[in-house]
Length: 340
Image 1 (spheres, rainbow, N blue to C red):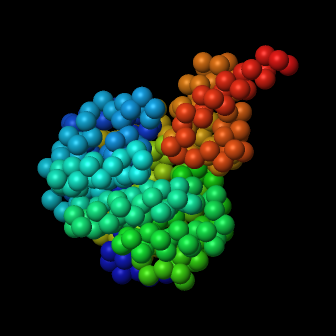
Image 2 (cartoon, rainbow, N blue to C red):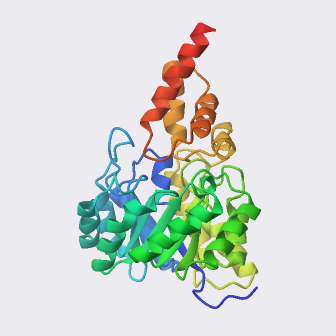
Image 3 (cartoon, rainbow, N blue to C red):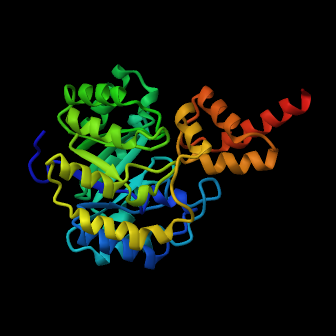
């Protein structure tokens, strides 16, 4: 397989998705050090925001240690070629936050909705286009929708002006053949670029990302040192090295990626990213990767097994934005255990 330079566009998400793994505690200095090193390695896009996107700093989703607009401005200040991107979930973030991010220097807007709710992204995608930003439609929990629905929702985002449509495996629940089927379906149905965002809860993030590329996805996400929600994302420095072995040119310096992963990012991690029983159950149950820490906290409070909470959330089809359900489910399970 041969792909010309920059035909595969990599977005680094450690400074957004990785925020989940460290309790949204990034400092300005940390963001400056990571963003500068990524820029020097020639990463084209770096996503920076609260883990749950613009406006996510709250008691429900977790308070940020540092104002996210200060983090965005800091990243912009040290990047000579990389563009800074932001994630926005309508209902958590608003057009107001989007405009503020653009004023801070963000040039890529990734508008994320549940896979069946693309209609709520219209205002935000259109506003991003009006601001002159590159736009991505981010279809989260893509494993939960039948193919026809996925195609329909992708077409909606494209009609609003999205330059790229992402299949997002928020739960890390997809198998490679499922990724291939979805990428192929979108390639045949929309004119926008197709992207893929993976989580590693079933140890398939890399395999799924490569499957997406081989099926025609031209935008993919990675996270240095696998720093992301749950068991993390596709590990960027490994991905770049594999693509180089496959003679797929990304324009990214994989030696510099290895160095910054080891010397700059690794010390930030509270503990190494690995597939624990908690993250594994996320993929098994098919629930949002950022639910893990919330479920563990609720489990301690109500003295129940966090795996039972997550499996029940998956059974109910609970999605991002319904974090309050985690405590409700934990309480119900506790009461049932008491009755027994």
